[in-house]
Amino acid sequence: MKTLILGLGNDMLSDDAVGLVAARRLRNIVGEHIDIMECNEAGIALLDVLVGYDRVIILDAFHSGDYPSGTVFEMAFDELRPIPGMSPHYAGLPEVLSIGKNLGLSIPDVIQIFAVEIPEYLTIGGTLSKPVAYAVDELTNGAMHRLQEWEEAAGDNQGFGG
Image (cartoon, rainbow, N blue to C red; front, side):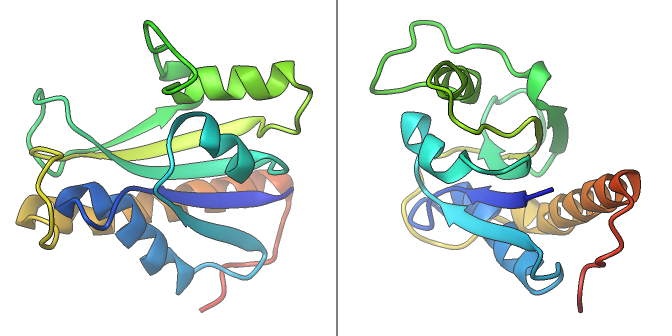
């Protein structure tokens, strides 16, 4: 099965880069049989990235204001809510994948999301805030655990490299 780890975010927006930071860390851990990409795209542009993969782990930031900064959440794709008022200029992941399927594209069947609550998403420049930086270990460990479960379930013994 073709697997992708996709770190989403923007290096220019401080804590929004947490998905990118986690993807970079995982690049040094997982084997070459798992693709790792960093992406600052959103909406329909994600179709170009996702097409052709069977399984995807998405690493990202989110800001709800409902949880302490640095809280890590693991969500299955079917737990995501559709975006009300979707437009061609912005579409959430459920809408993007639906469009891809309607177009007959090869869209991942399995998507796991790991996201970190960030204190806000508009700070330009700087590094990750302390609570978000501390969450990177939990984010990468969660992704590694999910990869191991997938590989065990598939009987894939390629390992994760060093």
